[in-house]
Image 1: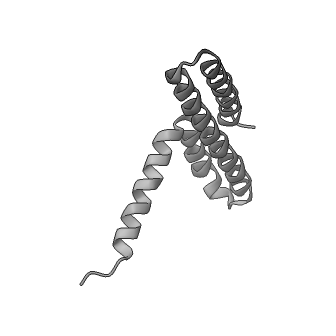
Image 2 (image 1 turned 90 degrees about the vertical axis):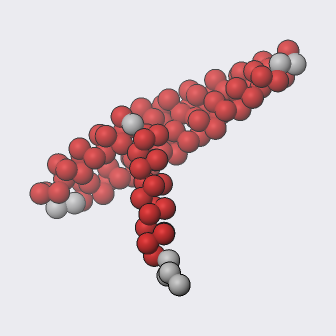
Image 3 (image 1 turned 90 degrees about the horizontal axis):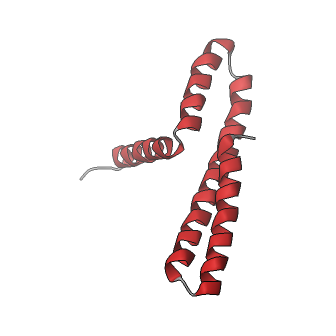
Length: 102
């Protein structure tokens, strides 16, 4: 289990507690912060699951590609939000390049 999954679970739990406390006290700001923490926690948990799944692919990769793949996964573990932004940007570029121009 990766750190992202652990942090995601803790963030999700903390967000639920924070939201519940906000409901008890009538503090809408606290409720909103709790919801945001829950979303962040679910994102990190999902991201951790993807990283864990990619570890299995790295183990099955040819030996000359395993080390560069591990370096890339280590970067992705340390910077989950930056990695997501990079992948999203590449997806947008590829989607734009795939469209026909008139």
